[in-house]
Length: 101
Image 1 (cartoon, helix red, strand yellow):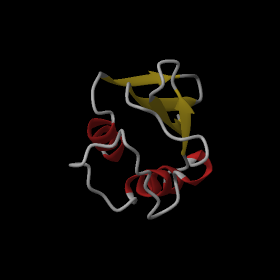
Image 2 (cartoon, helix red, strand yellow):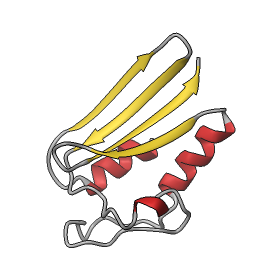
Image 3 (tube, rainbow, N blue to C red):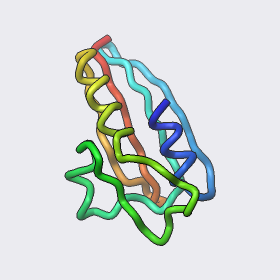
């Protein structure tokens, strides 16, 4: 839920795409948006608690404490999974959760 909420808050405009897929040994869930993306300098810190990017692209109504991605990462790891961030070709963000299947 935190990934979809972040996409809704910070994507500003555009589509949010949610996908699921499986492989022979893993289950995947991805959330992709068409927002402004994440500043590359901040990428190493996006799963750190209380870290939040403030940019001119962030709507003034987007409030938060910087816990969402840290919670997503902690829950994924607690269940034997992982979460990865990649920028999209259109400049947005893609987060993919994976778990052993």
